[in-house]
Figure 1 (cartoon, rainbow, N blue to C red):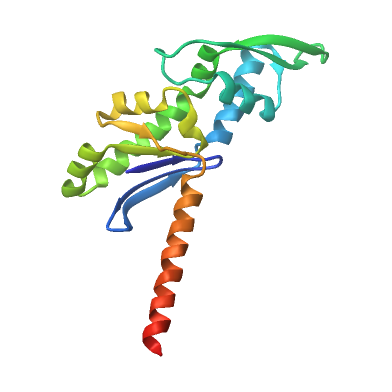
Figure 2: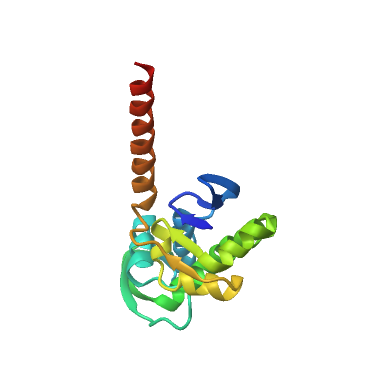
Length: 187
């Protein structure tokens, strides 16, 4: 099983013999989390920040599991009441609270896909675990939360941000090789 937590969507798929057996995509991912952080900061701190700041906070101090260390980061924005520039501090705990609903939605969708998975492949998933890719896989503790909630080991891919592009490159190389072999036999 692959869970690709990208910028705009989270794609979940059970792959077997080079094809997708069961899969789905949801519009809950990195940008949705950034929007949630913006709303959280406005509500809790009365500070208006942009999505770029929210993304930086998520990447720098974000976590999704309570066992991970808590860090603080200075955030700059505009006071929601006075409209003047202001600085405040945000913690990893704040990020976790802000994005928890999105993480729960992703976990729920993983469960739905697992319920639709043929029993033979479900046993393979238990043995091989869940692979996390995409920028969202870099959130501290996402693998641990998924593992605890699903009951199946989860791990972050070696290069989660680039592995989809790398896999596409490998697939294209394989297709080009097949075309070259086919051309050879046609002669």
